[in-house]
Length: 305
Image (cartoon, rainbow, N blue to C red):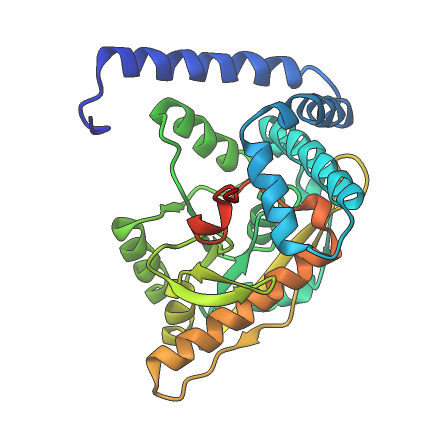
C-alpha cells in the first residue's frame, strides 16, 4: 500500500504515534533542558539493550573494533544508547539548543562565515554524531543559505512534526532523499545555495570503499555533486561537551580529484569522506549512532555451527 492511498488502520496508527510523540514532547518540554536530556539518556540506557537494534550495535562494534576487549565494547555500547536517548529527548526542544542559547560553540566558525559571505555553493557532509541536528542549527545561524537533505519519516504526521522541529531552529528548506530530492539539491546548488548531508549510511548501489577495514557501499552522489559545484566538500562534526551542551567543528574542505576518470575520482572521493567519518568516530565511538547496518548483509548473519 502506497503512502498516497493509506488504509484506515494505517492512518489511525500514524495518528496514534504522532499523538504519543506530542504527549511525550509536551512532558519533556516542561523540564529543564539538562534534566530532560539526562532522563532520555537514562531511559534508553535501560530499554535500548532490550531491543533488536542492540544486536546490530554489538555486531557493528565487533566489526569496527575487533581488537577492543568485550568489556570495553560493552561500555561503548551502553554509552551509545545513553547518547541516543539524550538525542531523542533533545529533539523535542531543538529551539533551546542553538548558538543563541549559549549551549553550542563552533570551532572553525570562520569557514561558515566565508561560505555565507562568498555566495558560492558548498556541499557540507557529516555523520550521525552525538546530536547531529545541532550541526544544521550552527550552519543556518552562520547565515549560510542551505538545503538539508533528509529521509522523510514513514509516518507523514510524525514527519510534519520533524519538519516543524527543524524549522524551530531555522531550517525551513529540507530536501528529501530520492530522485525528487536530488533534483531539488541540484537546483539549490545552481542558485548558489549550499547543501548539507549525512553520508554515513549504507547505499546498496554505491561505491565499495573501506570503512573500519571492511568494504562498505557508499553513495557517490555527494562526491559527484561537489565536483560539479566547486570540487570541494566541507566536513563537520558535533561533540557533546557536558549534558546538553555541544561543540560543532567545521574542518578544512576536502579537495576532490578531477582527473577525468569519473569512476576512479568517485572512488577516491568516497574514500576521503569515509576516512574523515572513521577518524571522527574513533575519537568518540560512544557518541556515534551504531544501529545502522553499515556493511553488507552477509556480515550480520549469525555464524554457522
